[in-house]
Amino acid sequence: MSVRHALLALLSEGPKYGLQLREEFEANTGQVWPLNVGQVYTTLQRLERDGLVTALGDTEELEPGPQKAYRITEAGSAELAQWLRVPPDLSTPPRDDLVMKVLIAVRVPGTNVSEVIQAHRTYLIQLMQEWTRLKEDDNGRDVAFSLVVDSELFRLDSVVRWLDAAEGRLRRALADGWIPGQALAAPPVSNGLPTRPKMGIRR
Amino acid sequence: MSVLELRSISKVYGRGAAEVQALRDVSLTVAAGEMVAVMGPSGSGKSSLLTIAGTLEEPTSGAVLIGGKDTLRMSGTAKSQLRRRTIGYVFQDFNLLPGLTAAENVSLPLELDGSSMRKAHLAALAALEELGLGDRAQRFPDQLSGGERQRVAIARAVVGERSLLLADEPSGALDTANGEAVMRLIHTYCKRGTAAVVVTHDAQLASWADRVVFLRDGRLVDQTAAPAGPETLLEQQS
Image (cartoon, rainbow over all chains, first blue to last red; front, top):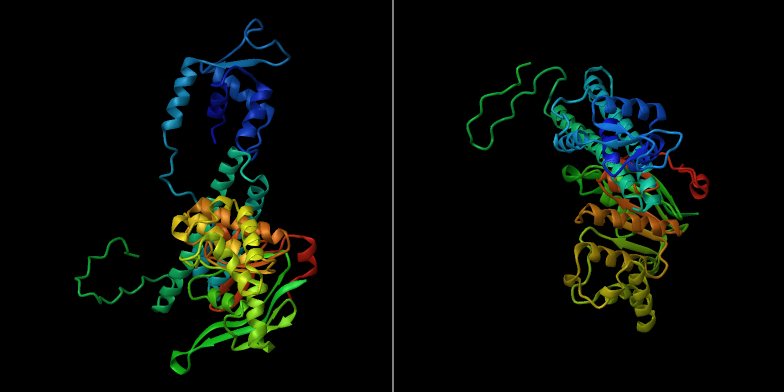
């Protein structure tokens, strides 16, 4: 999450004080990303150093107060527009503990992999129930919050679906006589088509 | 109070080499006001569990209690009455009668149960109104969208104070927003005291339930912890 760009986005609406920025940041992220004031000010200082925001003098449009107010610069607007359109890097798979646990469970003798998978599935669905309860209570009033909750539900849902698929794949493989750690024997050719050369299964 | 109680239900279809054990020793208690989702892959026994809970099919062994009464000992007439008065069914493909309007579809179970046409019609209109379908009451199913049809099916399932709602993939044919609306509705009815069992393979839809139980190969293998609440605290599953 880029605090830097979130602050630029809030300043693109008009000049604001630091504390106000923090409150609006939390309101706009459905309050699931709490920010401390320190983070806001250090980020603002860096943005100012880079020429993306300027601190307002006392004579300018906001009432003078105990805090400093900031305004976005043209360079800041350009930087924000650029950032919105650049896709985040999703090309490298994250190191996923759950995937590791399932892969390891398959290799540990005497482990019931279905049970391992079910324990994770139950936990994930409980988390999803909690998010859904929040969504139900809010009843779509806070749109930003609904977007955040949906994204969390879709993320957890994808993990549950992976578990379902993994369980199905392991069951089929074991039914076909697969021994963990070895390559699965090539399925018999039943459709009359020539076999394709093996790709990437050289373990 | 428990509305539905399945005691050690087993179900076997076929014989000999063709024998399929659909359910194995499944026990499940659903309290008034509780929404339970049943999750499991295809062939895990979800639909058998639902048809047995709805008395549409009998288990090979075990007992099915609805409102504390043993349904396996009921006469055919008593069971039909139970299905008309106490249980509401919602199916994936809505099962609305195409030749009847939305209002007529909803009032039909009440009329079959002996209500006057006028009384049944008024109850149907009230149920449709509540689901935001007041202006669709005189339309035929093919003049309604998928989401509207499913809401009509829910109105039909809840009309007349039914205490047990059974739904088989009720959002299966709907998009995300409409699917969510259906689950939100079912949960709203539960909060008013209806008990519901919803079969689904979709984790997002299941997460609307108060409790999710997992079926694998006909066995109930796990369930989520029921959140603390007066009913669930009193009715802990054995």
